[in-house]
Image (cartoon, rainbow, N blue to C red; front, side, top):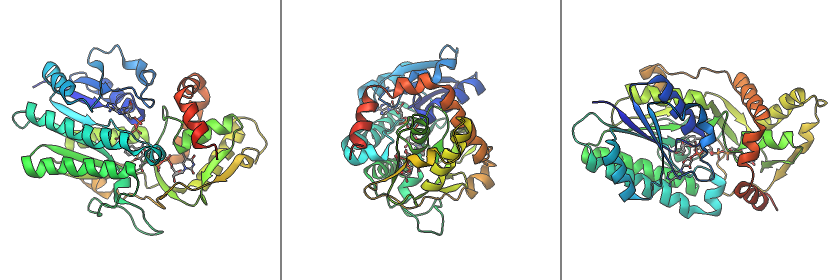
Length: 348
Ligand code: NAD
Ligand code: DAU
């Protein structure tokens, strides 16, 4: 049976990298990219593949079950890789309902529609999730695949709920699912509300660099194209019903990372050393701010042979160059709605 893979959220940050990888690497698959094009979805992220013979874009909302059902029937969808979500923790704190409806109800809609349309065994419903479902670590230890869930923000609680639903479909209906939980991604085309692109944009424009709380919170950073490679490996070789953790073995405190970005950008922009660091501004901490995330990615490494391909220093350098060389992209996405969000969020 020819694979007709529905990738949801394929106009977003990670989704656009995944769609590009699949369209280019698998000419025998049909790739259908379903995206609502919220503020975070942008077709300019994938102009290079938009005319490929094995690619189709469909604008639509995973909150609409009837629409999903007719799409499954008309396109004869065989597999799903589900990334569509509201993804920004700060937005989930100021407005949780959109996260609950898209991330939980939207995932339930997709599960139901896939379950009612699929017959036989040759299908995969692959749900893309986050390490935030595991909660917050102290100074020691890692998140493993069997770490108990302890989500602490509306975003992570909505992702945890959707993970539970996906697993429940496997246990109850023997539905062919896979799940992966990944650490913080960075790279090109990330909406500049997230730490790395926000800081790059503000350094370039000599704007304050808002570091939450003490800046000692720790995140484990992974290059987005390595995440897309991991999804490819799990989709093709991962075991049905299993969960895989994906991470970069690359922990940074926020403040150390922001200072490193300042150092690199001073060099690239021809500024005196230390100039950009003066922009660092400690601001009120995020409510319920998780202290540390760190993934143990031994399972995917040992069972499927995946390891990150890029050193962080090289990836960060490439990422900064991409933002500096793509001012039009930044200006396009930072106008309108984003500017309003930024003004409201960082006003106090
Ligand atoms: P993103 O916000 O950049 O993109 C999300 C995409 O989903 C956008 O294109 C948006 O238009 C689309 N979308 C939102 N609501 C929709 C709806 N109701 N119907 C259809 N499309 C809708 O997010 P991202 O950072 O690329 O994350 C993608 C997925 O990966 C999410 O599920 C997220 O939880 C997960 N994840 C992200 C990270 C990370 O560091 N960014 C890490 C681990 C897991
Ligand atoms: O761990 C995976 C998760 O990583 C994904 O599931 C989420 O979709 C993704 O948004 C990301 O969540 P974080 O909350 O970790 O990412 P964010 O870029 O928002 O923040 C990273 C850290 O930087 C966090 O400790 C908060 C801090 N921060 C963030 C912003 C936007 C600041 O200090 N200042 C800022 O302006």
